[in-house]
Amino acid sequence: MYRREHRHQLSFEDFFLPFGGKLSGDNRWIKLAELIPWDELEDDYAAPISKDVRSGY
Image (cartoon, rainbow, N blue to C red; front, side):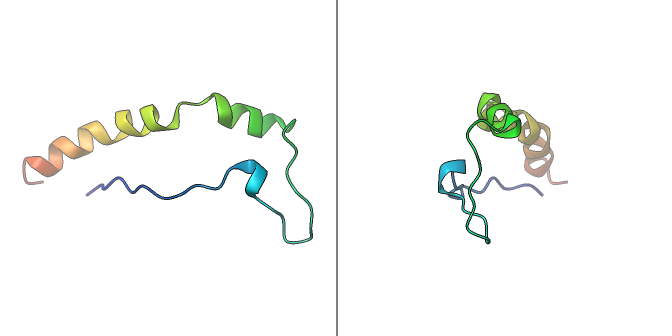
């Protein structure tokens, strides 16, 4: 069963590394993550699972 959970996700600017550093906004992975429509992606992922749950599986 899949349940969408609305958790507060830290932004990269608010994420601090344990040794006192922080992530650079110029990091290629941060730039990529900002381009991905995460909510839409999760909706597409959850759609078939939600149908199965409603049908009793």
